[in-house]
Image 1 (cartoon, rainbow over the protein chains, first blue to last red):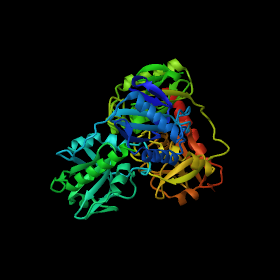
Image 2: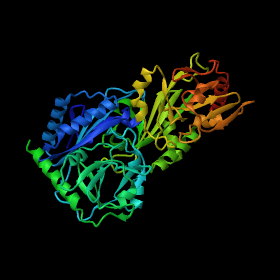
Image 3: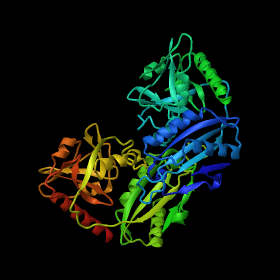
Image 4: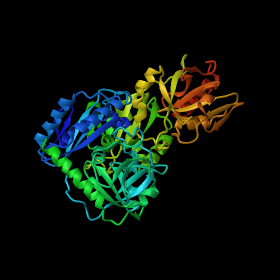
Length: 273
Length: 273
């Protein structure tokens, strides 16, 4: 498997960067993550939009323009031939002699196999809530300090992942947005979150008898929801069965299932473009 | 110049780690930074205390015990022979195949030349305040997202560095603690900051007619202080002449100078141990 570093391909085991890089020295970098199905990158323009926006927000210059970056990704896809995959594009603060000053960014592109599931699992995931507001939340930075640090906490709470809230206002999971379903609303946070591409696709859907609402909501609203689900590029819409040990709804996930099917349809349409 | 990676020495240009490391993937790591004078590491036990504590707080296992780590540092000092230097010890989340799960940490030790100044400069530094509370502030993580992102903001404000405050409560600089001097008090923040080694040395000093106070204080108190200074391992006590464009005190820095001299005496004593 090849990894692209600054537009040059390296074998997996040879893909290394100097320890002077600002990601290692100062945790400084952004990234994005998209998937391919049958070697076709899905919604690539949306992901590139966000990637260039993250770079701009963090004062990082991307040496490749959009077409060059698209070509680099295509070259990697062609060389690796992993039809269903995740593609991670990382942009770091570059090699800093002094370990502090922002330099010419390093661009790293990594492809890994990804299993695409077409139907919901029998069992949703369990989340445990945690009071944490991500810094610079609108930017997809590489900062996952809390999420990685709390891996043990998640296990100890018999959960699969975290659900961040800011003093009671529900925000997002470390790698996914979060939705609840009520009698006639599908609700997700609006502020101080990363605006996921899958989240935006969901908000563009139409469901009879349901309206989509972006607003703050509380953990109590989560516990009393009819359904809850997360959205992400790898999981599409994925049911959440428990939050803080409390069962959510009756476990049927009817609306989550409809949304997931509609997402899969959008993805199929994009494959044909 | 040699760099130590997992207890093996590499030449500067060959000191590389795989892009699967969690520092690059997820900004996950801690570090510490101490200085040597005439090849003697200063206050090393204090720094090792904090390093192992940071590792513990972030669930990172240090493969080397304290004596082994001390020996590794000594070996590096002997090989490099840079009498006056800074030594940075970085511990990352390790090589994660999945780019997310914490693995066996990587230990990187980098030595760089450091000029040790014995007297205060004629001109203190200029700071610009910024509303930001560091996450997990008590731990020396590699998270400098805000500090690096704001390098341009600092320049635009004709400043040398940032002064973080949490909604008006003054905290610290990105790489230094911050003190103000009033008529009879030397004040520094107590909560939600990194407790610097140099800061603790200062708080252990005795100055006739002055008491050391750890408490919250406001930007207004800064603007009206008689003196202000930062403390760090590289700069000892270093005067601050301006904050947000406002001149602090009369620029004589009498107390800062006394504190700096007393620090230099403590450092000299440690050299003789």
